[in-house]
Image 1 (cartoon, rainbow, N blue to C red):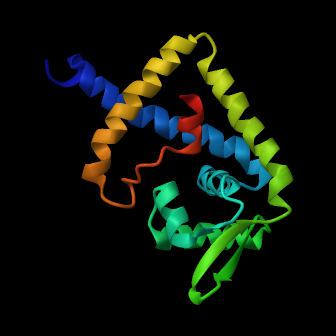
Image 2 (cartoon, rainbow, N blue to C red):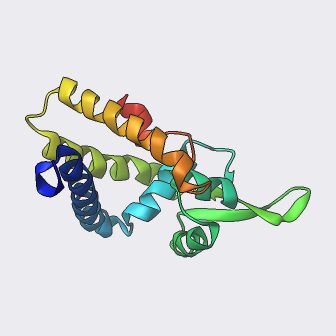
Length: 164
């Protein structure tokens, strides 16, 4: 089988389309909160680390280059969601922390994601979702060594870890 008749071809194409559309809808729903999917992912990762994360560690966790993260952090900091502090002993290294403003907003942010997942997965059985998550996990594990250090972070995202 080749092309459109090959289920593996359709899977790859479908993953790309679903990812793009899911992100587009999530971005639209996060916009009233002053956020985007990229900014939300940074906040979710920071919420799991009250001790803060270095900018490099956060970039690895969200799967983007440090220079790309800096722009997101600039926006988050300007809006009062995060603050950057020099690390004791090495003022060149910045640690990123959630602000007091961000903590209560995390519940609203999580509700947006939960509502969207429920809407999109309505009618799908838990077994189907678990099977899909396992398949995605296996594919991700094979992609990570090919993708390099930024995209290849081995830690699961908080969302996938919670879904397992």
